[in-house]
Length: 202
Image 1: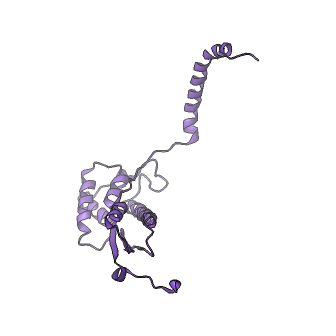
Image 2: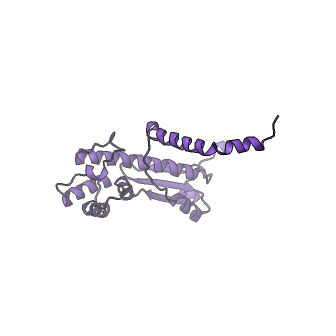
Image 3: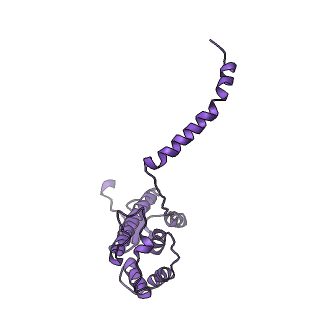
């Protein structure tokens, strides 16, 4: 019976086997608001090179390289802002910044995993296999029976842009809206008598 049919894997059915890697260097740059500090940017380059030979995670490698380049440097000066004070104080130690960056990296990887799952669902692939590789920023994907590998590759590799926006509390913007409302009301007053003349009387 059909319900007893075994699912065929890549070895029997063919398909695609893809490994996706999240660019944590780009994430760290975004979190720093593209800080121009030379030691910071050189540490990013060195950490990227280190990942080819080291088993350590990218954030650990980045912090180690930064501390080599700037022994007295404070990462909080690069990453702490008034908007993230709840998570990262201005006087945070480098270790605290490292933990913050690792938390942000984990969130980014998990969100990417969710996005990829959603994209894969669009292909209607029977029993796709998508796994988040433990302690890495890599996602392993197996898509049995895929007939359009190039289309799948383009969809999976489409990048999502990470952006940060400053938000405001209601009390910060309320006076501005009140002023706009008053200005519009003042402009409407001269036109009111004219409209009353034009409108038919009951």
